[in-house]
Length: 185
Image (cartoon, rainbow, N blue to C red; front, side, top):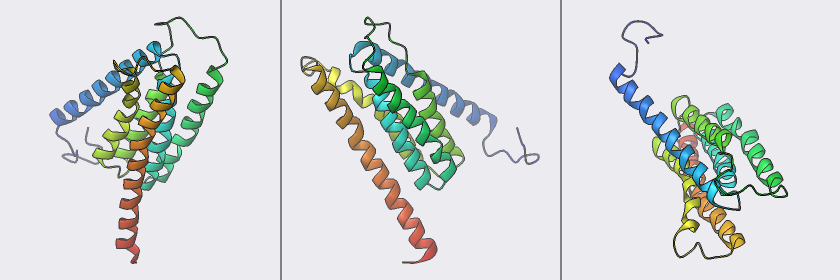
């Protein structure tokens, strides 16, 4: 649709369809993989990984030039962390009946799409942020599955947090470069 007048669309209709289908496929794959992880593990790994990633996504979107879009992620991350912490005293459901982490996945995806298409979030950082929660799968590997659940839980948090720190640092460096270019040293 050409909202600004005839021939003003940035993408041809075919490219727009490919991009939207790709976004839908990425969202569905992330949701399914994290739901499967959540149902397999005792320590609710998907919720914690999503809360950390949503916080990092918010900061990265703010540093990428869209303050209000990134600010939206802070309460989402806080709610995700709160729900995760509150779920530990609750009795654990039998395996394969855990609820999927839908709200966290949709929240993260929304922040990244807003930052990418309405802000100046680079595609490489958006993809890294989108894929970061999947690093929580690593402790489910063959040799690591035998470790204590608490050790695997800590390992999950470290594995997800390390690239997030690097992503935020890269966004901060880009922000500082852009600020220096605009306002001088």
